[in-house]
Amino acid sequence: MRVIVVGGGVVGTMHAWQAVERGHQVVQIEREAEARGASLRNFGQIWVSGRAGGEELDTALRARELWERIGAEVPGVGFRAIGSLTPVRTAREYAVAEAALARPDAAARGFELLDAQQARTVNPALRGAFEAALWCERDAAVEPRTAQLHLRQALTTRAAGRYTFLPGREVREVTGPGAVRDDHGDVHRGDAVVLATGAWLSGLVRELAPDLPVRRVRLQMMQTAPLGEALTTSVADADSFRYYPAYRSAALDELNAAQAQAATAAAHRMQLLMVQRHDGALTIGDTHAYEHPFAFDTLEDPYEHLTEVVESFLGRPLPKIRHRWAGVYAQCTDTSRVVHRQQVADGVWLVTGPGGRGMTCAPAIAETTANELGW
Image (tube, rainbow, N blue to C red; front, side):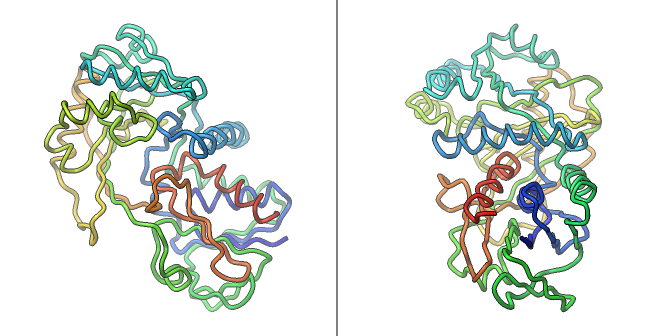
């Protein structure tokens, strides 16, 4: 079988990986010289902890298993089974953590509620003030800015001529069953075409699926100079409870009703997520904006808020900020759906809309596509 994958981000690359692993020939087409969208502009977190139960959690856990396997085969992916800590400071935050621990799927997530000293034993860099922390053993991390590069290198080496990457080409037209034309005038024919174009939902995608139930979400993030010590886990703050379905409970309703977010955090729908890169730098975010058109500039208030929260957990000044950026990802308007998968033409499928779950779930999303298409 010959598979054409359109999109060089993590979802597209994992579809290419699945096809090659199953013995097929793959051509992967990317409109940029390198993927530049959400796959690179994220935390690199394999985030099991906050996922909704059922299909979403099953997908995240399966993806976590696949990431670990791929990371062993491709060390440059940077897979690290580091887990996560969410420190809590108030009785209401603690109650939300307790409610999460009471979930029937808490063991599958690796949830455990630690006191402050136990949390600092797990992550000694957390020297600030907090009362306890929710530990999720199943959370992990990869290196988002280099993972796709190393995966493609591995595909090129291992696939014995069955994998081709074509950068700098935008697919403009479906020319027939399993066939697309790019902006160089070349037609690429296969048994299946997968459009994994991320948040690029205009052009050909809009033409093929004009009523796509997917929206775009903008976020702001930043990265520091090296911390100078190990941050041995990912870290979230209790505001993250407000944004992830795993924490929905009467205790969360009480938190939302009685403990307001800081004004800046509420205005920008903020939570703290933080993970350390291989070079020691910290990737920190994030905000959420849904109203189009998105602003072209970044705002400083959210960065100041994140800095304050991080420093309060670390008990020390944050290293110098070296990078700030905004990113956009695609999210199903029905946020309970893991991904939008749709046949949009004969032999052509669109796979988009995982939202903030793209890096977490991509391997399992691609595996499901391969299984459903009979690769």
